[in-house]
Length: 381
Image (cartoon, rainbow, N blue to C red; front, side, top):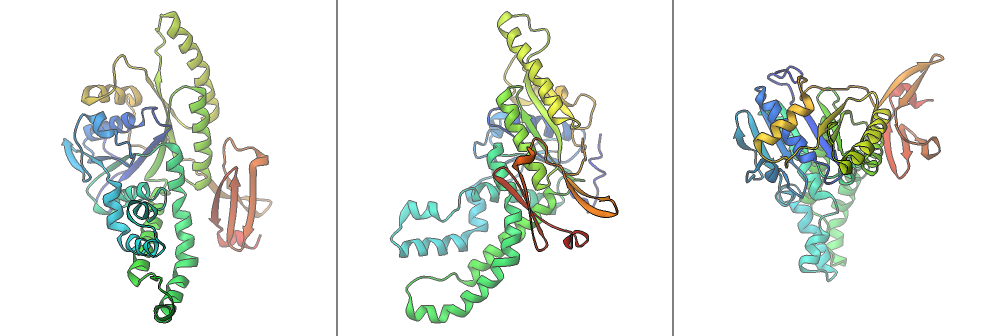
């Protein structure tokens, strides 16, 4: 197989992120994909950013926070969010702790409040940037947190870019000017230069990670689901928002499908419902490739069963290839004028809202929004 996109010196690794509703088998699918890539001679690392850390259970190995060689061309890693926070957030956390202590918040409560919700998982995702820069791997497979958390995290880089451009430079200058005066009049610790340096470094890393995740030639997301109506609906919503944020979904994985030869009347009824639901998947996600795996007769853990799952999903195809490359939005020409075309599947027209502020186009779909910096050709329209 070796190719993923003709890796070589200076080439970033092929990166595949698996996400889906909790319990659908995304960890097993991620591990199976990694084993299949490694078997083809590609240096592959599979890492889990899911706080549940099921990757160790799936591989039947004790994994650590650093990539561990577990087979020929195969490494595995369970990222420790706390460790990543200590590396990336120490100065900010220390200042917030002193600020809270100044207001009577102490101990565990203060420690919890110094880390905004979702930041621990966000720091875990920064490992993707690290592996891209290291040059050690041809393929990076990521077992992400369940879809809700993943969506929230993938929207962070857009917010980070806004803070870097609009807020942090001014805040830093204002605080630096006010610090000598503040010491004389108020007993509140103002953020030091180290705090702003940490914040700016984090924001810069997030923007770099954003560039990696939106590189559709090297990075894609694969949605894992079971053929259950409720799970399919959540996956459709996820797909809508991934398109809104500009991330490429190159495949949909439908896991735990009852085989056609199921004879038992109880499971035959389930099989019939699944067949109907598979039609919904095909209709809803077309033309994205749909990979299916049967409901195996034993639990998918360990090398043998993971290899069975990998063979079922990919057969003779390349698991590291970009299986679908349609862009989420593009510029087209209509009647001689440039038009920004954004594909937002499953969104009702009534739920969509557009607003232009200067160079920014704000797109809302339900409760989610994305800010797109318009190219110069579209700013004046």
